[in-house]
Length: 479
Ligand SMILES: Cc1ncc(COP(=O)(O)O)c(C=O)c1O
Image 1: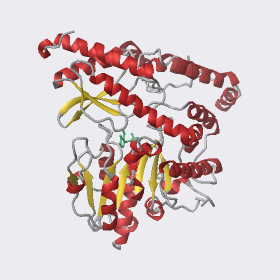
Image 2: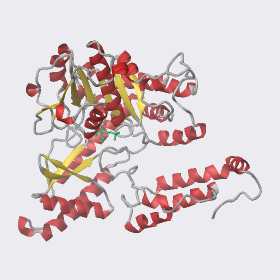
Image 3: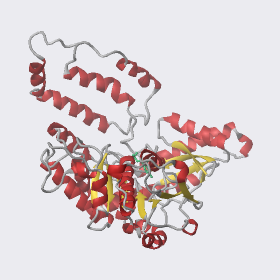
Image 4: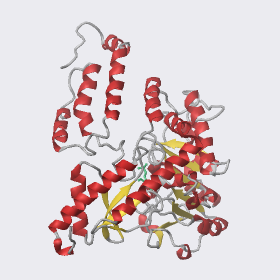
């Protein structure tokens, strides 16, 4: 039903809606009810629910709708088509859930609608960015000189870090990238592992480095860069490492690579989208040992830390390089005394995403961070152990962190297993390829995953693999 404002202006209607406590209460209540039923919902939407999305199709309406009606239809047609990635049995991609405190404060912060571009626009956002930067360095064990930019995710964090690297290397060679651009600039070398993440390649492309110029280093059977195969490095080189291979979860051996790389004068960047958080776990911090000597790091809040989405951080030990790479000026801009978020990021106007980041760290504290990350790992280990007992199922990686690579004896069987599993609605995991072999990739990344979820997931795999094996009894497995 459209809302025509027969008796007033648009502004009057909007003020009336703003004054309607029950309107906002209703949105919260519906969201709250959703959360309480998350474990009973199918992990992925049914075809019928997806078909109902047709409701949203159509042209821009002439007249606006009442806020209450908007909430109702969104909940009616939208909620059933959500993917239950906030629950405990969604293992697709690398997808965290959201901590309750962070979800709650994101609602409060939505009322404030703060712009985190400059301190003058939101002293609160500036303060919470500053505090989060400090806490993050403490949690990850990074040097005090490191600065942080709060961005939408690791893809953008990688972009910012590589822009800083590009600035620093060219500046040291007497080339002003801001004034002269990249055409005619001295050539920069880029060295990366054979399993470099797609988002790093995208960042390099945006920054004017073609993928064909990458000097790729072979990796071992876990996807870790082989230190002895790294070509000679120099001050014209960016060396790209990773904390957490997106498939196997393996970490490049920082302790071996960095002491040799740093004296060469190259810039070392670590993509640690989900894996950098291993540093906060008493059981896993050894994986990150030596990473603090790098020049830049990229990490997500919305994966392992379980902040709501739209949360990544670029960390850079060369504050001048990052701020020079992100510099913008305008007569109307007002420099803050403490911190202007836009100095460290590509955007000017930005959501005050540090509010949720800060709330997440505050909600967990040091011990909670450790427990969260260590528990994700324990669940992954338990799940991998139990899956490996099932007939026809093999685990192809060591469980370094939270990633499990699962295969059946041939690609077709693995594909069928994945289809059965995805169709079950009981849990969800996606596919990938591992050294030419098709795999199902499980990522345990949500605080909501319980031991019971692990058991239910094993049962779902058992049922699915049984169906595949029955169909293909060429494997000679008896039940
Ligand atoms: C290793 C790695 N780097 C970068 C990214 C990209 O992060 P985002 O999706 O937050 O942009 C991912 C995403 O899974 C990742 O696993």
